Length: 447
Ligand code: SF4
Image (cartoon, rainbow, N blue to C red; front, side, top):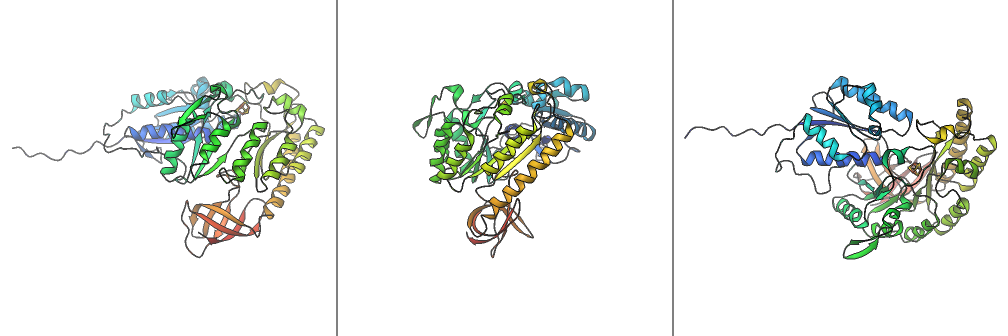
């Protein structure tokens, strides 16, 4: 019998992945990465030495496009084999004009096309037994929280936005499908589910709220029913991109009952009715301030986060002052602000005269100063209270986490001192001792 050396397993092809853009794009990246890992590809953190680079681009603002083009340029320079996907891929000529050397350009959610391009350039190693993917997929977020994408696209036509053009009309995932994914995530150790979509309150409209089976029960594919079902999983459930429609009032009961976090992320964008009309915002006719006050009365510890645009075409000083007045009255906890940027192809660019850049900058500063004082005031009220804090990181200087009122990446943090070492993903009871405009400090008093 001839001697035979044990057969060396072929080395796995290595992919370097760049994920740009919003949490929705991050979810797309996770899906692509999950599929790649299931097929035996390995991920690497550097372009050099990888067999291929995938760049998931963002095309929301011109500044995001520039960042995406720069990332593609870096990948080409450092590696040479580059596949581009994501929002900017909806207009491939912008990419190929700047970077003719890319191997393929695919649009948002075109997972199959991305994989086909990867297979062509770097065929997969066939070894299904060595490359089993965990049941919950591969996540790019830390293990203890996960984004849950409940729909794609959007039925609204906000005049400053080209997302419906890029991603199409609303397509909701049936409730049962979303719940099965959520359940798998929680079983895999996820403690916090971040519900995302372009318009979360519109969930299910396209399916006419069709019933969907979950845990042997038919449930409507509808915003409230989904929030209620998610609340049964025992994880923190955080709702993003909700519009102030009357039917949102019902989730206050779920918040009071501790089923859903007392937190709403509502992109108001403006308060003045004329500006909102020019923006064609959903729910612009609703009595927003009265609704905010009623929610706060029902759920006193409710945290409200929002984003606004200043310098929208035609915005007058009076309309801007209306916005400042709204900020004072609504007392939102967390606020992001953008200076209007004319995104190519957005109808808003031609709606009215552009606001000069220096006026935009000046309004932005006034807005941020006003909101900083409000945020600081709201945070100060937490000093002396006990808060549940989920730990995101442990450093030699101590642990850093978030209260129920803070979403990862976009809101504030809590710096936690503790007698015993805390673990990432643990939820501790923390006595809050100090606050500044954004962050809190405290000591763990219960585990
Ligand atoms: S709600 Fe408006 S801003 Fe948001 S994705 Fe839809 S069209 Fe764009």
